[in-house]
Image (cartoon, rainbow, N blue to C red; front, top):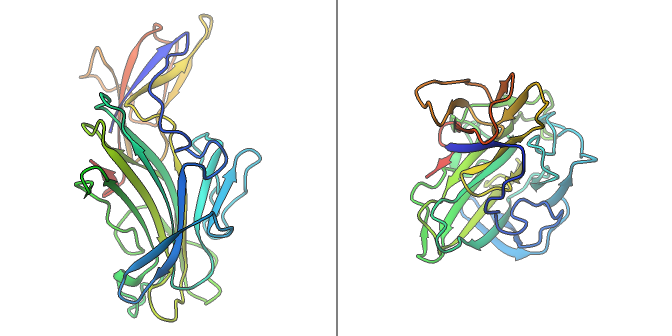
Length: 298
């Protein structure tokens, strides 16, 4: 994904995302919660519900909600936002939990990008008796409701053994004695360009185990960014500042920075770039950041 960052001595304003898509109201307002089941045919059946404690949880930072027991990473997204959510639970069973958000991209806004952050805890059911179809999973889907079509490149379900990098073994086992696999906070992109005027629905779904005894669990932490264009203010600073640091969104695999006036020169390949002294106000930087394999909707 390519992002434009503006360095300025005063705040600039860009198009905001739909209301509370980033959970910053501290509620599930404008979001629809769902819960239901995941059967031994790999079929998910969910129904609308009010938020169910233990299956749709709102998190706040500050004061923060501490570390996840299995993953030992922050429950709250480290991207600096005030609120994240948790969906799914630690109770084994044929469960399915989801949240969805429906909105219309403004007419004339042909550049529209969503960045989401997620962390995962999946009870490892990859032991021969649990085919991938029935393992605990995270599913991220985006639908064009106006045209009744899914996004051209939907994400595959994320399950243990799917090949997605970043999974690690928890040092704690599940109550059933099996291993638990975790993935620390990472970011991914939904590229929704050229869909101005279309109604879009995004859905995050987490399941437990599909086998009849439902002996494994899964849950996920989710957060959304507050900007939906490909541009935002990267840093503001005072005239007497000696340096500034400009930071791209967290959780991506690779980064590359350059000045818009000199695209052939790569300035840095890290998430944060330092300027000592600061560049002139009004400087426009470009940063390209690459999600982990399979996690870019386009």
